[in-house]
Image 1 (cartoon, rainbow, N blue to C red):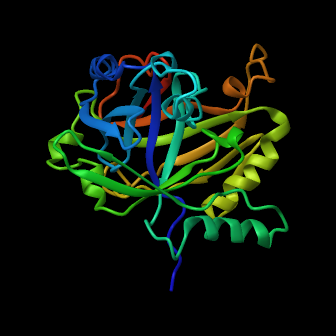
Image 2 (cartoon, one colour):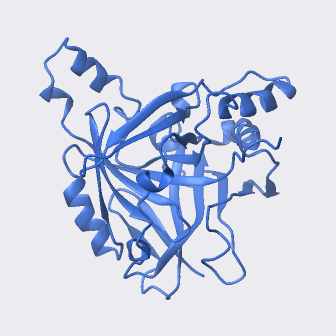
Length: 292
């Protein structure tokens, strides 16, 4: 039996300050996106809104519901808030997910870790854990999350989201107008990750283990072809999404600060119509319009 794909882009996470989902919704609408209501996650700590694209990838606009100070010190709620995987991350593009298979038998973590072991290295994906959220209409969503480790891999290596309930409940791509945007946005052209030069080769090996293939290397830029669920229908010739890994070019970057030195630098978005400004801010992240 063929193993499930481990290179299908599912969504990209954009974090803003606590309680700001509605404000962020307006900001993304002003950029030319149709933004859909999401809901509060099962842990009660975060809430989101969604931008669904025609390739069936979506942007998750997420924020914490409250600042840490809202929870009394020493309480279980405060401990959960302080230890959340995104609690210490600065706003912007903080993470991205590949599509998992929702299975606890043929596990994504085992597939990736077996590739790593075959190369004589230590596995770096944790076992699957359950997650979910409640939609505003009361529908409960369930999924399995496969996270990388250690903690400093958050937002650098993808996590996997594998649906237990039907994916169409989590990703509201119907009716088709949900994915029609004033900007003419179609889908993801690329996810560009930048890192410190000293970790480039190690990260490249890890991405290859995740994706299941070696990168195309040009100079110091490492590039992999990804899949999306509807990649062949949105652009002329079926142009594909890519993951790009490269070292920082900016000498002003503090290379000791992992939060700014390693992570998603920008997203490329395929658009049908030429945009007046090729690059825009979210305002916490960077978007590049790519003419399809």
